[in-house]
View: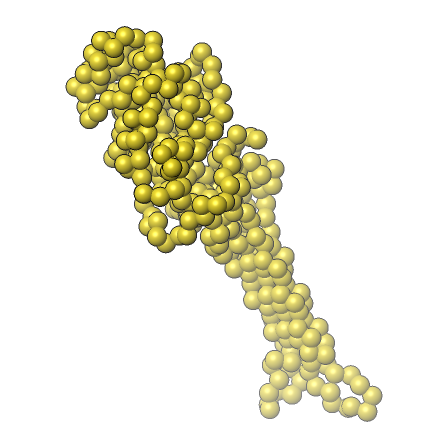
Length: 356
């Protein structure tokens, strides 16, 4: 499945149907009077968040969405039928932005959330509705209100409890494969991860969603490497795991680079709790691991977890620390720390399919 997290689409609600101008015509009824019915209402444009979707790839092939117009009124006081709403399904975590990307119109944070983005036009009045004691044979009618239209951007921010960050080739893919069911691609070269990856971690009877994003390099905020465009997928995380390669040239410098890029991106990511993990300790002795750990603490890390995604060493202690930042329950449908979890019902029995 191809991954797409941004798409620009055109939306238009349906116009109202025109009212009819008609007069009753029957044998032996000389003055039948007006009987033109009203037009029907145009269809609304409705967006709904549904389970089972984790990409906006469908919007690469269809960018224009137009609701149907209402039916026109007819004689014999027949009203036109209203048009069905146009329902657009998006993944949970999708934001609808204005065309200039300056305003978030809707943020879909839980399954089943349904929002009317554009309302259909009202149907026009037929001439029967204009009949009065002083206007017995009206010929006026309304054409029906036009629909609304707009261009919007869809931006997907995956919902995950924990975010995984680090330099390219820090071992993030190996780590997420070791602790979850993600099945991420692993290679002995930088940028093996080109798109965000999700995995469900089960630890001590609890579940949480772990998101791995492409590695950051110095200057990512200015577009270096893959840039920082995928950082939006960890904006909703409760805690970040900063994975650092013990086999790198300078672990403290590696931590500084990533932290500066997170700060440059902003959006509150720089204020999220961090768990610093010194990865690939199986490639070094205990003395070197301890020395590098002291360097990282001197550089600002509160605590350093020596781990190995390849052998599993130290992972249990790290996951124990992660659980301390999560609600004391199984995976919820809205792990965002910015939204009250009690507002939404958990669906623990629903199977979850990670990106892949």
